[in-house]
Image (cartoon, rainbow, N blue to C red):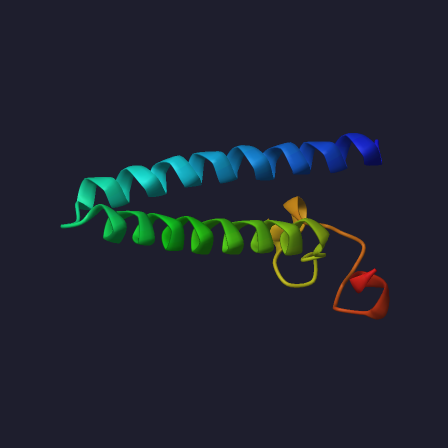
Length: 90
């Protein structure tokens, strides 16, 4: 079961990252820039920021135990770590 959940989270992160990457590229291209290099610079920076924060937030939430913080979120995110501890970093 743990393997199935771990692989499901991995697939979910990849799918969400692909969707975010495509939508970021489409939005930045829609804005339009004067030069091609300016467009590419903004696309690279935008995609990096979006994917970095998305991956980081999803990984932290998947390991978080929010049952003490919120009843609504506690139903979805009930990991084994209540707080950052040496075991969490492992």
